[in-house]
Length: 463
Ligand code: SF4
Image 1 (cartoon, protein in one colour):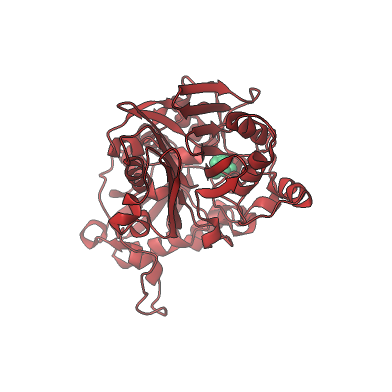
Image 2 (image 1 turned 60 degrees about the vertical axis):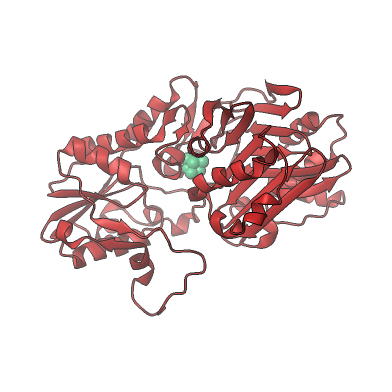
């Protein structure tokens, strides 16, 4: 999870503003905290806080004080057990070479071993994030340039990382050799920008150039842009969940617009598991596109049956904690005229714990739906993710604990079916035309990528 944005060479003092917009466009990738570090070539400026981007940078001065033409920013996703101010990114430290800041999307799988080794050598850690391990490895390196120090550090870490690293006058960008998480490279006039998702470029009218390649490092400074591979080729394992749920449909991820792939998931789902119903609805917003693909293939009318409230902030005060199902009702309300006396097919992108879907099914029935059929545009999530998606442990994954028949009864719905893994991969393949890659599908299959084995101990240190 997490969203990152970086800029080099903006017009004077504009870098932080562009980064603010870039983070705002990627708010869906993390809502726990946000931060920006900028540089005017000599001095480094920073502002971080817990909360949404619009809350963190509420005062105009919080952006105006971030001077310079170089900046990186980070939206952090809330993860179990690590919600505190020390973990806000970008991490910013002073090393013997000057300032160093880092924004990380992904999760390392050998953090514990590396951290232990570094602590034995005298390193003192300030946060509980895996990203700080990278900072220490860079700071300890004896190599002559920052680029070489970063490469030496990255060759020691294993797992998922899309990274932005910044000194006073250099921006370094790197993506792990497997390419788990997306990272795009763009341009606006003479300025260079990077973002987890290309939707961030649209907001500032930057043009998408290409994706940062897996195993590639890009150095941007006054001498221009220098790109090269820093690691040996390995099998690419792009996170298929980015296409299923996480990325925005208007982003280009792993070579294709997410919208196109997601519609195909819906199409294949309808071919495999059509339902006899009067209306198809989505769980807004994440399953809208798959539901459209499903409805058009199934030739059933698509309707807006659930309305989502987007404005629940972190500080929202629940009027009465004892009101039943309040949490889901605050987020979703039903449209009676669409649902009453209808046989309803609800398309969702995935089921993790299943508790929200169970409550939604009840809301649909309370609104008068005669039948409720659930169609999921991905396979059952049965295994935890160790590379950055905040899934719970196997025991909390409902599909790990129940059969589909048992889940149908537990959800109290008339039918439940999932898209097969074969068709999920087939649909996602359109995004890989030029990349020679494959997908990580470990949360469905348990087949974790060979060169980055899972590590249960690292499960709560994600970003
Ligand atoms: S385990 Fe699932 S969520 Fe995690 S990287 Fe692989 S596909 Fe993505």
